[in-house]
Length: 96
Image (cartoon, rainbow, N blue to C red):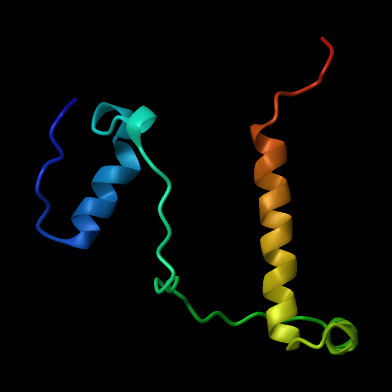
């Protein structure tokens, strides 16, 4: 295993790991799953323009589910992203 280099900043480390193959530095076979219950994800505020009708429909759906409509948008996005990533990782069934 290679030794992980020291980094001067988080940005430098982030850049390193975006290009490095972690299997050269970490023995993932001996890794254990851990939980960080107090860790909060980094958030970024964005501006998103949606048709008014879509917002009203989201509010109706969110009200039925007893959640804020902004939270419902995050739920829908999260579900779709997970679905797309899963389908991207599945082998293609195309017949040549």
